[in-house]
View 1 (cartoon, helix red, strand yellow):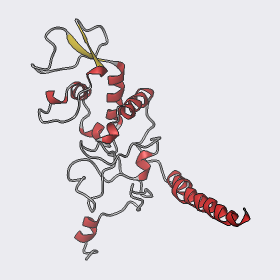
View 2: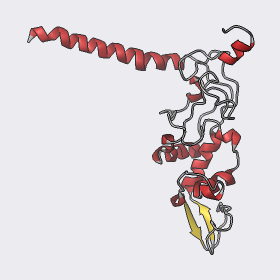
View 3: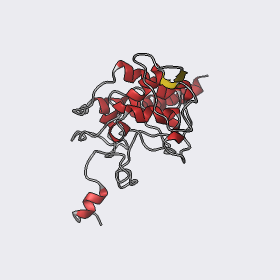
View 4: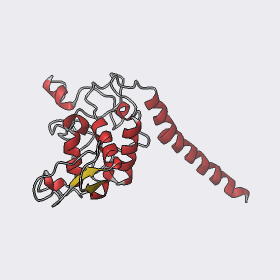
Length: 215
């Protein structure tokens, strides 16, 4: 029995070391960084919308981490500056994602601020882009014979609008759009921030090459 004790102690030591280095230390490192000026906590509506975003699995097709130019030309595609750890100060758990079947969404609120656009796009993406492979989410909406006071009517082109009545957004759709509109990281990255790949935020490889500092 005793001969197995050193192995169990070693296993516990490895587990403790991994927990420290992979969970506790990174958390402390992020907490020590400045919260960017301009970043705010989500409102109640935005948080509810974030819950809808998580429940519908949007992260499976959309990332929230623009990469640096030396990794991929995300900046050139208009998705915003490279993300930094401080961008996710109020995200718990984070929704970084790994797929780009659809565009990166970390700055979609800055690129597409229109509530009406998002509502139409969620109800039927093909009403905006006929080539879109994004699924439609009609269960976030309902058809009414006539809109009531305060209803958000979804603008739909011929062929997508109902034969009679109107399509109005349910509260879940409005909350989801509020969350998407809140995704705006166009403020400058803090000078002490870390990129999401763990490196200090600083000049890109392209910037260095332009100054003759690389290669």
